[in-house]
Amino acid sequence: MKESYDIFISYSSKDSHIVHNYAKYLEKAGYRVWYDIKGLYTGVEFSNEIVSAIENSKLFIFFSSENSNKSEWTKGEILTAQKFKKQILPVRIDDSDYDKSLLLVLLPLQYIDCISHIYDDTFEELRKAVVMFIGEPLSPSQTNESQNTHTRRKDQKLSVTISVIASLLFSFFMMYISGENWLNMSLALFTMFVTAAVCILVSLYIIKVEKNWNQRATIVNISFLIAILFFLSYSMMAFGLCFISFDILALNYPSIICAILAIFAIYKLMSFKKMGYALLWFSASLFSIGSYLWINSLTFTFGLTLFACICMLVITLIIRAKHNGTSLWDRLS
Image 1 (tube, rainbow, N blue to C red):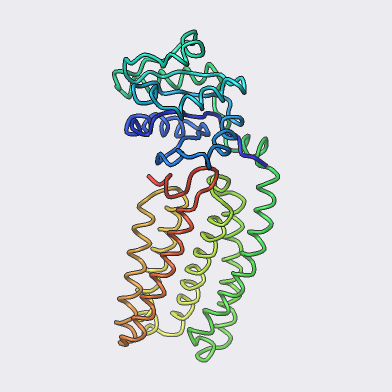
Image 2 (cartoon, helix red, strand yellow; image 1 turned 30 degrees about the horizontal axis):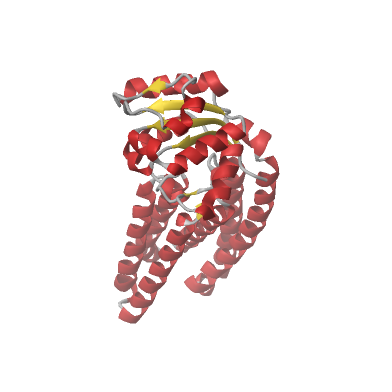
């Protein structure tokens, strides 16, 4: 099922420092916007994706400038929008004339004057024009019901299955490596079952309620879920050890804090916050330093550090992977 958009934005990558401000404003207003975030779509191999995005958009916005009027690529996008009978809204960001080959298409159209770049004023003027063309943006619930119902259900089933399996495996694994079952078998089993139950409930909540679920690729959602379940099961089992004695509490509370920090970092990443990525690296560093203070073994510390770096590399590759023309990394703010 092809993803649809409210707005397709056509512009020159040389004007990205201006255009991206408008695109992000429209996204924050609730519209689903397609735009070439990093100026990557300049080859024939990407033409099918761009044509599909134009075809599945309600409104085509052309940011007119000296750069975009000279661009053969934007000309092709405008002609494609005309072929699909899309409503075209020109937005002028300088006083250059339209290219002669596009005069018949663009000249009759009412345009928005954003030459001044006074964003507070021009942002609102552009938003009002968009509302006149396609109305107010759909709420997340309306969007899910009207366009992503089948995809969401499919992803949910897969994610729930993986989450349940991961919750059970992580809970047992954390009990085994902690050695809690050797200290107090009854408490260990109780903590393991409570941990598994909490992990399953948390994952179900994220899958069913988390507002940005449909805006990320399935592999990204599942990766986030697995990471959260790993750190959540670790902190739950470590906390269970604390009931045995105060000495164990004193030994484990730093790692519990690190795990909670990692969960918070992942939550921020899920909300498209770049701070989450930095916090995740910081948490990985704390785990590596803490491992040396705890075990006093350079070999173990080196191994854990290497493992943490590999995990962060995998996470980075996943969030940089393109999905519907953009990546999660591109959307981080």
